[in-house]
Image 1 (cartoon, rainbow, N blue to C red):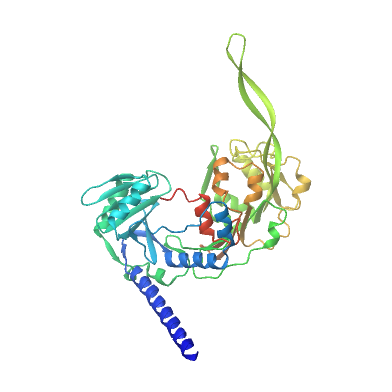
Image 2 (image 1 turned 180 degrees about the vertical axis):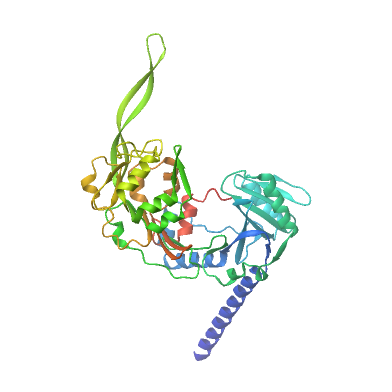
Length: 452
């Protein structure tokens, strides 16, 4: 019996050692990449880490898999029949002249399998020498017999000629150097499922039921103030220093507001609470025909559903209101933001004796406004919260935005200024099923359908 236990233990040790060496070698090979010297940002996607976490979640929380099977669904995370060698870490590049496009390059292990996968997706494909061409709505790729360079863009058809030229340069290895010798070498030691380094740094992790992100790529997760969510569909707190981040001049409806002028009057935090929905009077214009079949304008008064917003700006309210009126932002009696400046719905304003300028979508909100901004736990940090489920149930979000947010439950962010020009932001996005990895939920909700 002892012999059997020793043999079993030895086998387990050897398997563990072999597995560790295998994945360590995959990590080593993935970092032996060439980085374009003119890249302004590099994104590291930890493929092995993502796969391991998804498999671990499914191992210890298999109930969602059973539920999916009953619905005729399958939680498939990665395809392996695409003819590509998927590395432990995938690196994507962004360039100054094409800021909305991410570029990458992968090794081909079976070109015929890759071509079969492309035809299954019904993408446009042109076989050529030296590089064949693949085009879909958000993807452009060129490949040789052993490598494929690809570009992913949010907007379809963006700068197609220049994108293809960049792909050729990636395949030819022009102006590239090893990651270890580049200014992005710290990516090797950074943790997280996704790490971006360059003009902006961010870390993103896909966990069970939530996505966490932070611009502090080496720091720990932050605690979010739970009391600010109570009774609110949404809440936003902007400390005074946030106004220094806006452009020097802001224009809307033909009117201009100066950042420096605003900061002269704003002395503290700005708070906005979204408390469900309210109605505002509106006019709908239709056309009817008279007896001679001439179109006649018909105006109909209706009540339109809008967010019930209550906001307050700690400021020299009297002089701030006068400045905004002088710039054409407020109307003559300082009671409303002009529709041409903010056309979505009416925003009424009111200044009180406590040096706060109030604004609301509720016209007679003076008495209800007094509570806005009280008990927020301090005014030195940026905080935002949105209960997406509540917001979508109110039916007041634009259709495209509602579709985009539908797979999510809540969004929460918090920001702290560490130095004069440095702001660290932490955030969390929750999804409906707390037992399923968030990336798997996004994939199966169709939220990532824009990806190839």
